Length: 119
Image (cartoon, rainbow, N blue to C red; front, side, top):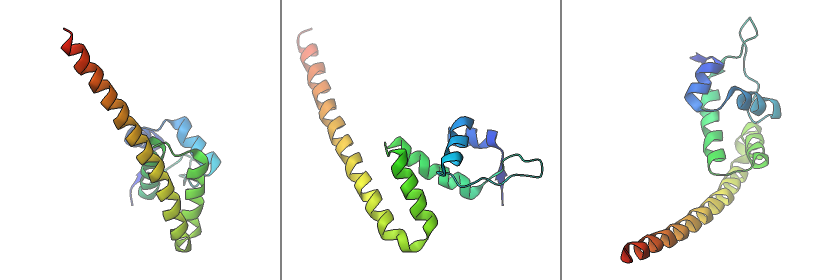
């Protein structure tokens, strides 16, 4: 199993060291293993989880909901229905944001067309 240094994880995920420490401190990221010198060593599983966190964060999920999702995942498979419900609600919000952006883009396109017509 591969292990990764914090610097490698920063490079791979785009999260800063401070963000990784914060996510570990608040429990969004499970405690990271350490080597004999006490240095953090991230696993493939840690990287996979950080990919999930990245997706949720980039789509605007609040930290409180990400924490709830993390709790559900760690609680086991009997929480799958609750995870689905949480993700479906988030998906509805993301769909609303996308619809809003599409409408705004339509407005911008109309303005561009107008300004081109008066040139």
